Length: 298
Length: 209
Image 1 (cartoon, each protein chain N blue to C red):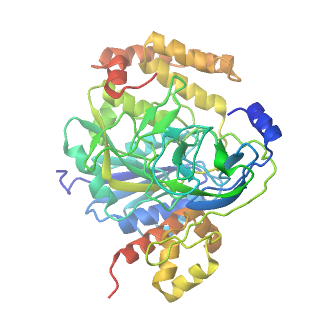
Image 2 (spheres, rainbow over the protein chains, first blue to last red):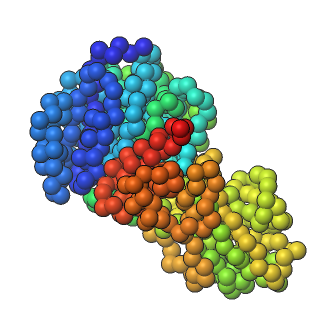
């Protein structure tokens, strides 16, 4: 059991989330029956006044803190929040989520296992009033497109990947394993990379069916999304962790994408190869193990 | 299903029907002389993981999971169609030769068995819709006994007003509502709307005295 005296830090990165940000913070405050937790909002250069609304709404609430970043992207925003967090357990939560009562206690319970590195809840969508749930993710094919997994049992169990909308980790492990990859650009794949890295470093990634978090899946985003940057993140993940043969197949999937040459240029000028060598020297499992373990078709 | 094949099918049978398949949807489809009709199922509000659609011409049992075209379907058959994660639509050709040149009622049920699709990466814009012959809003209301209220278009605005006055039926309507619609109606955020829906559901779980 996780001792309920362990402080939990809920890190919420946000960029132009409008009213959803204040309501997400309020929801966490009202629906979390846990004795010691804090909320660290990391505003990443919002221009819609949402950060100021958080500051005004929770000015008198000691356990809510606001940190301002300068457009660093979701991975670095989460890392910044983690660095400022006081808790021994971190929960990274998107700024457009609804957390029902008892979500936190159920979510962090599996972290009592020493080999458990990342825990995620059953993800529900706000768009449909049904019992539709996604419990973990896997890769559909060599393009690294994702597919949600259905529920297999009612108790925590291992899954290949977890959605970054809500991920819980122990801060000590998170710091030791290197946080979210700082080389990822604005948005995309940073959550998959974290989970894969935890698996390859010998940890387990688990889904907790008894914890449900509702996520707003949006038709459009309140920020610009560049397809090239998303592809960049995917290719970075692949080159960091996967075998040459798999990387070759994945590159073939994107070779005809617009801006592919530019993307390869960005990768070439990054710390990609040194980071790849470093990670592959440290890991105790390889991608063959991962793909066999989860029957992953990449 | 490529756009070229859709165009070909339109040339054969131009009746293509669009509607958002949330909850239960019904449409009357006119089968051609070959007992076939093209149906395109699209949800323009769709923004996240797709879902399974249970589609049938009548009753009963589960069918196979399939993509795209189902070439033969007899009355009483149901099948699941998994929406492609990058599209918000899929095409189905229903064929029931016993019903050639007849109108049949097609009932769509959204099931909760599948939950597929990524959370990230941009969603492509849907292709321009062919001629819409029928537009049906989803059925998304239940009455207190848990049965679906037939063909209630969208959220009943009265349900929101009734909520303030209390009453099990208004809560029931809210509990099965969609956060995005409630948010728009009440001019609140989706997170806050989700809280109302969750609260309504929890109230309904308590037995009436």
